[in-house]
Length: 386
Image 1 (spheres, helix red, strand yellow):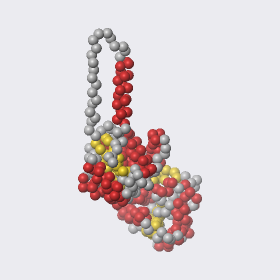
Image 2 (spheres, rainbow, N blue to C red; image 1 turned 90 degrees about the vertical axis):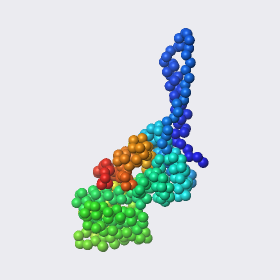
Image 3 (cartoon, rainbow, N blue to C red; image 1 turned 135 degrees about the vertical axis):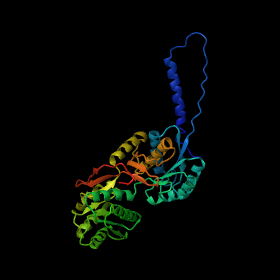
Image 4 (tube, one colour; image 1 turned 30 degrees about the horizontal axis):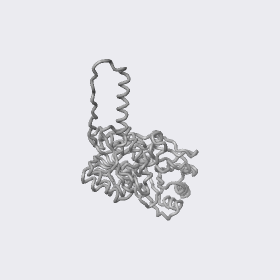
């Protein structure tokens, strides 16, 4: 099946509008005068050459509904940031690594200058081989930073970005001894690696990291972390859990001898969706980093106005990637990392030449009411990532 251009169905509409404009001009000219009439032959002007941007989306399979919503977000980005010289072309990944690799090869052979998508880390890995060989940049939707670099950008909000923001703020407020408690899984290990890197960059002491097996009860795991702390204690602890497990872990830290305050509790972006965290007293006043809710609200309003429904969370990543691609074609000769900050669905984002996607994240505080209050708006992302 040939890929479908998002603009194909708009071309008849443009021709209809042109005809309506001619009718309106004729009406403004009044009635024709008597005498010889001059005939005018109108010829359709050839359309200007278009630069193709491929959208790799799961348009069939289990993720088809999400794929369609991400397609709509990309359409919105095109209309807001593109021009008639940009043509988005859909490629169905079928939600599989094989489908993603096939879609990428097809897009490249059809002349795509930029690839937007695919959805998952495994699919991004499958796409990277042919994309790098053809020197076609890829703006993948995953937040797995391990897939980034050398022409591949991971557009999701990564654990490293969240750690960098929240630890940077805590260090500015005087915290030096930082701990981490999380499950020993991909997310926990990503948090741990990010904390080590940030502590080194900020000249902080080596962090205390406790990654627990998934079978461990969170409260007991927290008490184990507290027991490993020396006489100097900790100034702050990142809790890598979410939901009820985060509440139990926070209470376990207090029970283990780390009172809050003075201990600062730090969290991550998943906390933005959980107002029940403040039911645990130890989490009242905790801070975490997440996308700017004001930017998200504006995006959701525009999406709902255009398509009649609220977008899923991941639609914002598709909007960002598609908008950056459209603008790169128009303004930067296809260079997606031109250095400009893009006003994304989840706040400002800047792509760097090394494959890093820097996001400006807001800083939140959990209030006793259960609300998460913005205490520091999202900054413009710079070369240092803060």
